[in-house]
Length: 337
Image 1 (tube, rainbow, N blue to C red):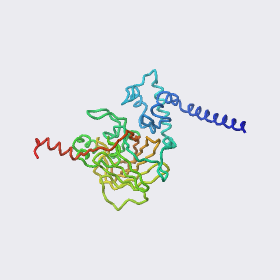
Image 2 (cartoon, one colour):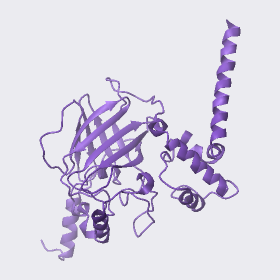
Image 3 (spheres, helix red, strand yellow):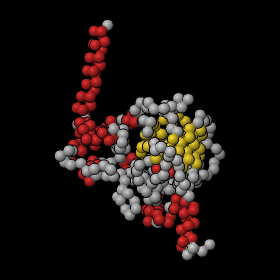
Image 4 (cartoon, rainbow, N blue to C red):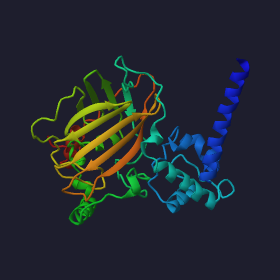
């Protein structure tokens, strides 16, 4: 029996070695990624203490510039640590993982679960990116941090008229953005606003409460359908579970919200499908597919990690934007009541 067991272990170890060797042979960027990138960005680009890199939405030259100049808390990486060719090989490796589809984020979630068996998402969550300012890659501006973007391939497929409208929106963004007038941000923008939000999860509902403007979103997971046509700032959300992924289908928008502060917009024909896939107790892979035949030529996707906040005693605080607007108006009037 011991001989059989030892033989099994030897064969199993050999299989693992062959798999690892095959991957390294097929993808010359594996070794460089594992030595320099994996500690922060996780195994196979799935994310860890730094965001995931799969799917990769940037070309090699853009990644090379970020590697050399650094970004946010990521320090610059020298040629000695990672040559230009090494960077391009790493990009090729990540692109090969990106082409493999959703397998890249199926990490075998082993965190807490609800009594019904679904991943337990209860808690306070927040993004760590600059998508609220611009969902596409952008340079730093006054009071706006630079961002790598969250849009797949960094392309929003606008129709010609809509592209012109987005540029006009951008030119007038300081006054035209509905959020600056304290209207609700809509979905999916409210998810990546620079404010935390809390998830309450029950057997037939997922409720999300947001620090921004005390917004509340109810996602029905009871199998009910969307109601008769009606328009809402936050749309109407219906969800279901596909394995460990919460899939949320949202329609019935009023067409008055923007997707970010850079003027990216939609119409009332917007259809949003969100996929919340937990990859650990503290990270959720958040994927959003956008459809709007009135504005875009095809559907397109955004993706980013959500992080669970774990500070002791943490709670949502007040961000009463209406009060801020009234206070600002009062100052402009010289304090007149």
